[in-house]
Amino acid sequence: MYPVSAKHLPRLVAAALCIAAPVRAEDFLCPGGTVLVQGGGERAEDICEAAAEARAQLASCNLPVTQAVTVEVTLGLSGGCYGLYHCDDDLIQLLPLSAYSGFLSGHPDSPFGHLDPEAFFNSVLRHELAHAALDVMPCPYDGCPATQEFVAYAMQIRFLSEAERAPFDRFATETGGPVTSDSLNVLVLMMSPETFLRNAHAYLSQQEDPCGLISEIVEGDVLFDIPFR
Ligand SMILES: [Zn+2]
Image (tube, rainbow, N blue to C red; front, side, top):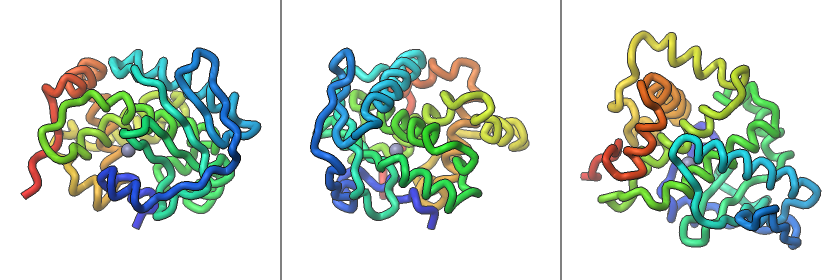
């Protein structure tokens, strides 16, 4: 199975699968004081900059991260996870840059295989920050993974550079017609995350007012999840 699949598991399961160990103990408080980096080592300031940029990007699309978050760089994301957000602790866990580098060189055909490691790292950080921003999203069920992952993947891809986003844009225009919200269900998410994330970008980019849709999701007016039977 595609090695990022575990990050799509419901949060509690994913958290149980992915017990992390800090790389280094020192903490680094980013300028502004809303992001604390743990285990970032010499990349701590780069991570601060990436987090600040990602927060601004998300806010520009009606998805502000209103709480302080901790970004922990760990070696312990097992089960194929490459990023996790723990809502109870406002904690984002990411792997060291070298791990993303290894993933990309080992999976050149993955949807993100054309990115350089830092662009990929930053996109995963943006994905997890989107989950943090979605803490306020009403969910009438035990979890709303399809809606959560729709927003997180769409934001991960939307704010790549134009060149980095090109393969996703090509899919959106060459897919043979509008992508429907039916294709953004939890079954597709679990069985083929690559398909889901491409659909997510295509669906959002095909909207007349993409960031308006994000607003509606945050308000709970649009939901892609249905009750489990
Ligand atoms: Zn996610």
